[in-house]
Length: 175
Image (tube, rainbow, N blue to C red):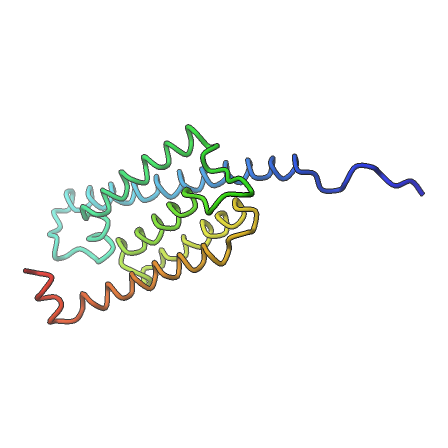
C-alpha cells in the first residue's frame, strides 16, 4: 500500500475556490443591481406613460420611485464597480478582523429591505446569500458575528417601523 505524500486538501485549492466565490458574488451584485434598476425605470416609465398619480401607486411602485431607492442604487452601483475593478479587497487574511466588504453587503441588503417595504416585502431573503458568502470568505470563522450583525440590523429596522407607526412619535418626526 503506497501512501501519497501530498495531502488531499491543499491551500492553493481553497484560494482558487475563494476567488471563484468572489467572482460569483460580483455576478450576484450585478444581477441585483440591474434588476432593481430596471424595476425602478419601468415603474417610473409606467407612471409617466399611463399618467398614474402618486397616491394610486402600489406600495412597491412608491418605494421604487423614492429618493432613498435612487440613493441606494448610486451607492450600490459604486460599490459594485469597486468590487469588480479590484476584487482582491474582498479577500480576508486568516488573521484579520471581519471583512468590510461583508459588512457592507449585509448592510446594503438590509437597507434595501427597508427601502422596499420591510420584512413583509420579501426582499429580506436577499440577506441570506450575502450572509453565507461572508461566512465563506472569512474561512468560516465569523458566522455568528455576521449573523448577529444582520439580526441587529433587522431588529433596528423593525423598531424603526414600529416607532414610525405610533401617532405621538409620528407627530414628533413630522416637526
